Image 1 (cartoon, rainbow over the protein chains, first blue to last red):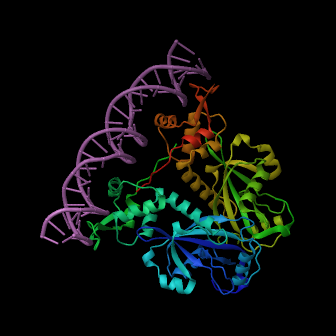
Image 2: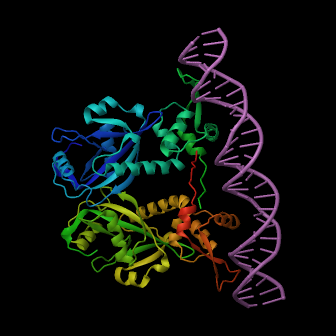
Image 3: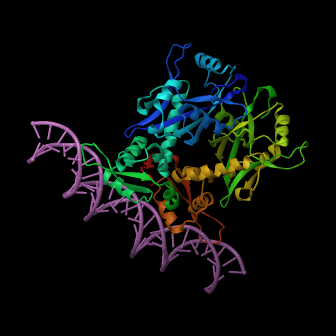
Length: 246
Length: 246
DNA sequence: GAGGTTAACGTATAAAATACGCTATGTCTG
DNA sequence: CAGACATAGCGTATTTTATACGTTAACCTC
């Protein structure tokens, strides 16, 4: 975010773990921190120091809006990373100080995670204006600062959330999708494999999946019927979960 | 925490939602903010501004340690509250500024929740040195600052966590407990009622509940066998949860 | 020792999860 | 254009888990 340095709180930041899905693999939106002043190229999460008079949650939304151009996306708080030494490396500190024109000491960062329909995102724009691209989550082995740890936490929470809340699967899917897409996204996030016949039997109970009069085209096998997600039906027909594990 | 004012970061604090259980009701540990300088008595969560060079998570443990004298208690991050106006009321700001001898603007507070065996806590000490007492959660209708909202978030996360993780039930129970105690704690937290016969059938499958050669005494009905919780067996016999809801 | 109260065990039924057989419908290849 | 192939889509049988509820047991109080 661009603003005069003195308005930033030099000890509070937000970072966003932005997930997407390309019908096969889970993706994450990362910024290539390459700049004239630093010669080592390193990937980082989108994020920013927080302006002094801004709500934290609201500010995370702004950061995401500026990056993707998208408003009203799924965005939730993840965890707050507050190790005293998380910005202790000289090059990290210098990068932040030159970017924001502030003198920093320690930064507590509140991380958020967001789910985005990848086909809604303007990849060219993100690349041109922020050097941001989608990466395969499984291909990422290291990130700047403690951002790898933050990404891991994002994955953990995403998996946990998916157990109770199928909606997040639909935040990542395009408007029209096949039942196989749903299974792919569940498998990509949980790491489990499901029997296709039983999986679709389970989905068949869901009243919020509306079949369209449309099929896949150009696939070298029987084309699947496409579905859409009915948000209203979802909230109306969802039964109360009254269950616990021993 | 007592320290020279200049060492506090004036924009970051921790607050703790501390839950206990008295074999019937869910309790919360609160501090009566009554002081010579303020004449209105108001309850608040235990918490503190954070010293500049301290880890956030570690610092929450210290706050709890100073309050209860207990170390190594169950303590997890809950949520970070970062509204720009959460300390906007004049009396709130003045109370904080005089307590910590710092000038504050906005405070982002990271909230934690903790589970404590109520019989391990030294109630007299907590009351004498910190004006802290256990209150019935259901009796609390309002708290200082945005602490009521924080408490609600604590309850929400506790309920969510109890679905997958029975251990938290055992963090609240004493070393020896009856199956009825377990049911009571589940009912107190979830707000659901369970059929006692089916509930204990379910518990019967749990290999980590070890029956003791000991019964309740002095109860006006058939005395229940007491059990203990075997942490090792819990982690060894716990089966993988491979389930999701549509 | 009768009555009250909760523990503890049991049985019958419904619902959900799991395993796996089989046919249908499109594209691609020779 | 016939046959291979791949995934969609439907069905059945079995096991596991949840739910509902009947019954006896062991302690207290009066």
